[in-house]
Length: 51
Image (cartoon, rainbow, N blue to C red):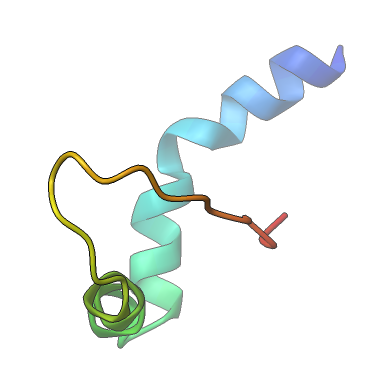
């Protein structure tokens, strides 16, 4: 099996599983968004440390 096929096989269920395994998923990520103070047209820089 190729890496792409392996990834595609599990990718569709990834978000569903994360929400099931992390009970406070929405609160956790929602808090991050609330900390960003910006207006709709503001340019911001984001460093994504998740992998």
